Amino acid sequence: MTALQRIKNIITALFMIVCSIILLCFPENGYYIVLLFLSLSLTIYGVKTLFYYFTMARKMVGGQSILYRGVVILDLGIFSLTIADNPTVFAIVYLLLIHLFTGVVDILRALEAKSISAPAWRFKFGSGVVNIVLALVAFIAGAIMKSMETLVYLYCLGLLSSAGAKFISAFRKTAIVYIQ
Image (cartoon, rainbow, N blue to C red; front, side, top):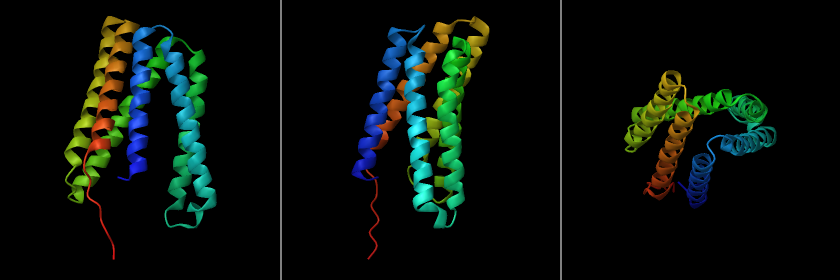
């Protein structure tokens, strides 16, 4: 991991902590701000990925996957912005679905790292399992208790655990491969 990637992970973790604090302080209307942060970050990342595709990746092997990723992420960013007008339940369920999806992606990346015998796959796998478990507990608690505050608090817990994982991965030693 380069120094710039470490700084990016730390800034992302700080934004996650800020979002969870906003949701804890304003559980009824704080999700608007969180959705705005999420939609802006997804939209910017999607535009950046599409720009990368049109400038360089279209001539690369596997460049079409970068195009697909950029289109999907841009679409998610725009959709995140439009869902804020819907009732609170839909917005929180959408945030939990993204959290669940993040957990699934973490587990898939960990299994891929395990297949090439990378030493740090366990941490990524554990992080993915925690994300999935928290999202499922939030869905079940929301369905049984029918309390928005419970959903918001569980989502905040998931944000804090993800922020902690980002901090740990930013400060973890990584092997540097030199090619001569």
